[in-house]
Image 1 (cartoon, one colour):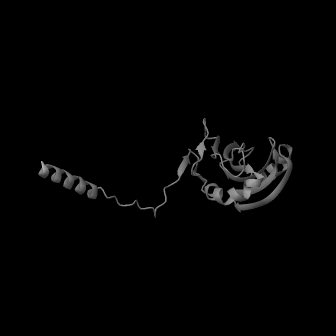
Image 2 (tube, one colour):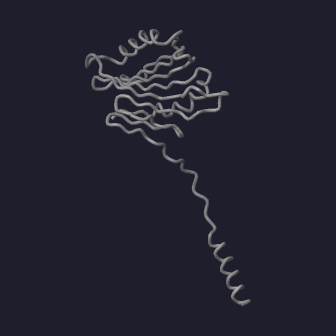
Image 3 (cartoon, rainbow, N blue to C red):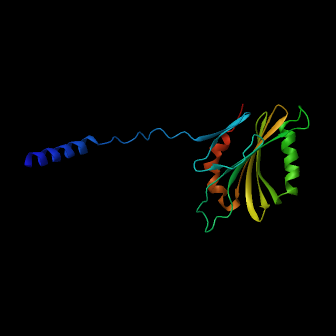
Length: 178
């Protein structure tokens, strides 16, 4: 019986030693989730989710609830909208100017923070104001291709914009037309 107990303990000890695991290689960051549509693709921020009924022409990415304020009632988001342009020769400059003229009609206290043409077919504007009872800041990118405008918009509460800007920018910059 003593031999049996000794053999049993020896086996358990051996099995315990054999179960030593090597720590996973964390030098490679996990690849982000990708929103991959027919005409564009974009990386999705970690922890964000794709809103139900996401379509090619209108899709929203929603942030998780944050803890930057006491009660988080505003869902920070990235929206992608695709619209047909009035003509094939409609430029990104013309579309940006149209938006800058139109936005004050839907955003109270509209103010441009930054505007810049990034490429011949890409324009970026950052603006702030009030909408739906929230002081918000938006960063919008306009991409023109094949008589369509692809609008990528990040929206968050103005008081949180400085925090989110550097976190979200790599994802906004990952947007690519196919």
